[in-house]
Length: 66
Image (cartoon, rainbow, N blue to C red; front, side, top):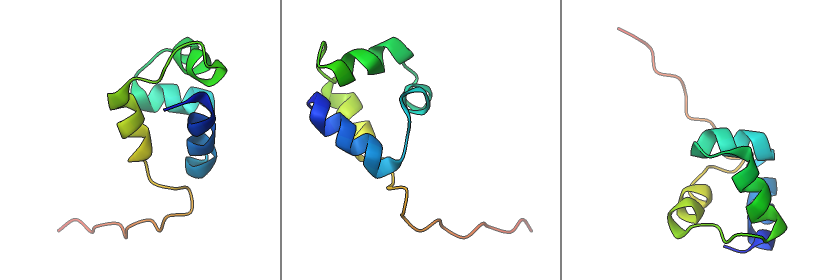
């Protein structure tokens, strides 16, 4: 995943850099390096990002406890 692709994914999922870092369990500085194109996004991380739901995806209904 390139820096441009990561930027598109961030827009798609409506995440900021900090939220993405928290969700992935990585340092914010790593996300910043990816976005600057300094470091490539690891393949497994890119897959995790692509699997995050879009911000406009319907939310599943809450389950009731019995």
